[in-house]
Image (cartoon, rainbow, N blue to C red; front, side, top):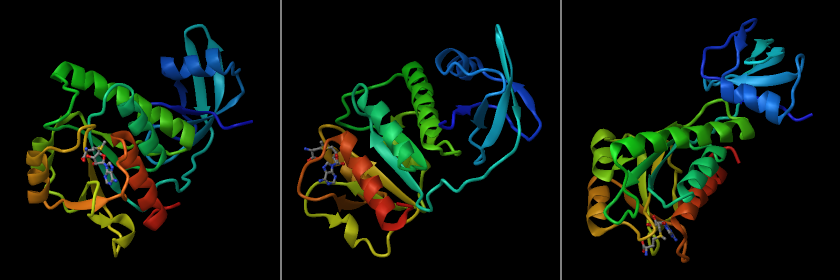
Length: 243
Ligand code: SAM
């Protein structure tokens, strides 16, 4: 039977018996129809996973007892921050999910001059919660025990001011820029900036250049914003990550 992985936002240790949070309990009991005695794997983002057994299933409470702890190596040696201009609708969800599967370390959504999506503080906080849930769901599915950091959406300027990076820095730009395969030695940690549907504006590009971002091309075809970062991540994982 496939491993059933459940995220719990609480410290875990061998021997601990804990009540599962409502969403995890509902998923285990209502959706997966698990019973007392069934095996689950708990994780909380601390880098480990905790095989456990459901000990109680009763109305309003589902409990599990942690049997052991495991630390499989599922994090890539390549540390990538995806500086992603907000994309419309469900595209951003897709980017967070796929980037998590591809081992991204951090996703920083940004509003740029040509971003078609604008968020006030309340909506930005709600979106952050939503994207974090998507990243957790992706970790449940792909086996990562470290949940990538997702930032609250902010301006490009704010990101650049707060991240005087020691990382290698690139802005993905269609055209004749440096190609990924010619990066020697391949950079890590690395921040990749991806523009919105309409591309980065001149001011954005000037700010990125001033902050040390070199242009990086993914070849002669124009990719959609939701494709570009994911393609770059996959290419970098193949070059120096764990593909
Ligand atoms: N007309 C826009 C332009 O020329 O920038 C196209 C924007 S594209 C739909 C959205 C973003 O994806 C771009 O800002 C860039 O960051 C990235 N992108 C798309 N195709 C790319 C390529 N071939 N190489 C590198 N980055 C690319």
